Image (cartoon, rainbow, N blue to C red):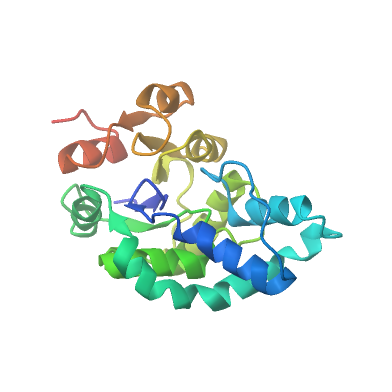
Length: 238
């Protein structure tokens, strides 16, 4: 049986981090530049590489694109210091743990590989997910993160596929890759890569907006594990 690669978005798909990502940005910017950080536009669905570039541009940093890696390195170094705060404030969204466990345990069939495709840099993603007991369901080493080389989220799909192919020996082409996320940018990334797109209306975008973005399936939330599995596997809901 052909393997299936399921790539989960993080914020407002699996969890609510209660703003600790923005706090990490502000902490790193203050340390690096000695002043308060200018506030970027909406972060929803964007990569940290794109957000950092905007922040540095708004701050008037010369050649901001050349400073992003340095800025991310400082963020990554400071992220573990937010672990205690994450334990206090990050919460898993209803049904997230059950959906991940069902896929891991083969309840809808064998051959599923799960990871993250998130705009967060990896160090921040690990801090957010750490207290929730979800990481054991995921192969984080094959995920794609906001500190990978691409600003555009759609390009991260190829990054994750390459990593997964090296480990599992399958290219995960076409709809053998499934992206699950809460923003039109998640849906657009899946469609651009020829992957299956599952929208979850637990963020700031409605089910209608996610459907209009071209999602193959849209769920109100992850609370019904059977519906989640049906959406991922392109089957009629029970």
